[in-house]
Image (cartoon, rainbow, N blue to C red; front, side, top):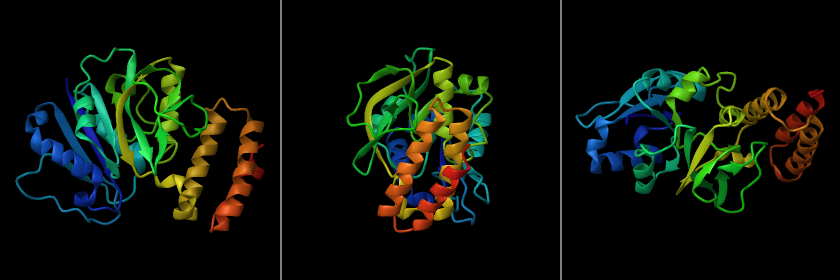
Length: 274
């Protein structure tokens, strides 16, 4: 069985990436894995900050020259993965364990109705993925039992997606270039009544979007705009319920977020929703 792995970078040196450090450590101990695994580094950095040289290069490096987002990077990887069964999506900020790699590179016995395999992900001490149900996620209070699930949401980071399934749905939806791409993907899986296999493996991941005090207004605009597109075109949440959530978010941001422009952008988008 063959796998293609993509690590997407943005304004970070490859050697500083926790994800690459984890993968490099595993590859150096298990070099035979390169017989079945193709590794792509897709660099969305706006400046050329990563220099590729040396004899130990075991990956293909793509310098985008601008931030093309995740969807375009993933679709590029999909085009290179047509001789593989699985496409593994990695970002730059995950601490990946040997247990994770041993699991994700040995998917031979996964049933055909399962089209995604995901670890359980913790960020800042909280469980962020997977989340049972496919509405706007609420924090999961405890890890779930390893096995096959239907109708859940997971983040893209560290997931393996079946290539044949991605081909069937036409690849990744570039309307969600960066944010809510994972919501869209797991909505598609749910709508087609296909399965997601949740590993017992737990990984740590830096999910910056959960920290409103650490993101810029432009970054928040991107997140909220994508959220509203998803809500209007794909979500099963009634619009009245969603608008109530936005009102609650506005007041919470007004009280606790330093950059009040974030709160007032939430209010602005609330008023625009019909």
